[in-house]
Image (cartoon, rainbow, N blue to C red; front, side, top):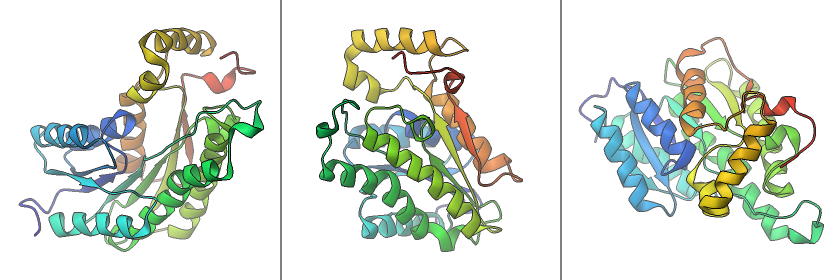
Length: 262
């Protein structure tokens, strides 16, 4: 059943229960778009994000789907169509990692690589494929892939994660060529972002120490906030009509520094 206001743009944001994804979902709601909030485990948080989107004056639904599964991607896209009759924007934000010492090659296994790539790369491809036909019907069709500075620097939570984000960057360029002129495809590459994900890994004390070190090596002397990444995502999706095949680095200038003091 199509929602009451089928004239609104519709944005699907994968992995949008927390962090950057949640900030993106809310940013699209504030832009007046209906939002599909995707999650795999964080159900309570996903429902809260959907409620916040609705409070902004739009329609929103939380949908559980593991984008590593192709059928789940297709079902997710179908739920958006049944609800609103259209899809205008896809944000491939869902991502996972395996934390591992880059100097210890035995710390990562083949299953580790397969799991990370299944979500970060294959999942983004599958979800894009699932929404392609509906995107082609939209006058403002856009895909934005949330990558990472790790895909450019090779520095990150693990070699598997950095490699997957490098692959996502290449996928962004390939899709930009393949889907033009109907659909624009771009990526954002955040640096160190202050999210729950970081807090869960490092703990509150560890996060504060990390933030100090991250700020010390960043030319702008601060850590990136999720809302700042969301600003870049919404700009690429809704306003940058002459931009496709671009990777926008959002990292307070950390890529300008040499080495990895962290």
